[in-house]
Image (tube, rainbow over all chains, first blue to last red; front, side, top):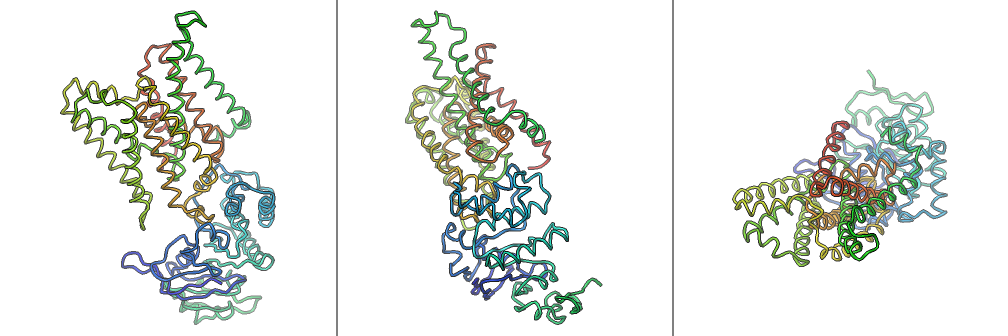
Length: 252
Length: 330
């Protein structure tokens, strides 16, 4: 379980988040959605201890995020930001190997290598394993980073807009792979999504933020209702329910 | 980068290590034995070789300090264009020397020479670095950019203060001082070498133990934190290590701004790797090869040993500008 208690974040006088009190149960895929500047990424990075909250506490799997030593936490929760510091002279396999650092401190054991192979396979990266990161497309590189956090084998996986830079085919493939990681590997996945239709199609729960506060928590079916969507996004919306999952239409 | 990649297919990396190592050996032998008057094997021959060995040993120490310091600085700052001198280390060295000449007279510079002075000088530089990094970067709002900027401004401040004092020196004193402030391999004193080697050996061991953490640190703050590294602590530790290495090198042969930069840049290209366990030894070997080679050519062929660091800095500065223009940004 990931829980936030009175978490807020301010820069000077400007409060960008909170106070938020929220519990995200273990298991499944939880989507964080909301308009720009709603505080989705801020909330996620606080849970991933990349950002200290101004007030309140966050805990992941029972570990207080700020008090637990970073090294211990790295075996419980992994987080992937949108932009990653770009390192060129690394192969995909080397990058994914870094995911084992919390366990091996750099000396990969046979078990570590197996985990790396499994992660590469899971994300269809085996043919690209020996390529350098600067020889990959943006989408392939994104997948390599996701493979790294998968190899970290943490129960909790926090992803900040992993669909950025992906075309439709790769975005769908990525969501399917994440869905599989949740179903087959039993990971708890929290994912910031821009496209609410992806959230409706793949998530078990949707947490909607607006102006730094939690506006709505519920299943995709509960969330994909015009009144809720319009309240969150301030945009007129229609919801089509004639397919496998509800679809929001807001283009004109 | 494109040339590096094609070259990579032609010469395997272990062979490159061997080639650079062979150049180091060859240059060292040449520096030691070139153009010696007395018969090889005679007493006079060995006396001269022993005297020259001080230079070789100094060069190896400086190469190790500058190469490792620059690579670690790049790793800690996540930027491969910066050099440690941006933090004002060299300027601080110049300031210490100038202040001594200014307040105590130029004779004081040579009168106080000795191991205690070297230790005090290095201690001041390291204390300065630790305070600066600890205070600026270790704080709650610690930002690497602010730290670098303050280092830059302080460096400029030290430089101005030094040139102010230099203006007011007696011309004779100024002469003695400026001879010292040019990086000069012949400046080195055999007496400092054991201390220097002792400290550098401990530091290199520490770096070797941390090589995997350094690889993770190079992935940037967010990824390093995600992988369980205490990013802030690692950066400060790394910068303090850099401070120790730079202070030793500067005390031995004076300030060098761009030498570490060329060595590090070439080491990245020629090893085609990010891994510190490859890049660091290669940078040290390459540094030794360049310094020994340049020293041999200038000292024994052109008889102008004082120019070694000047020329290396000139070439290094040129390489720096070219790289900056080619990349177009930091």
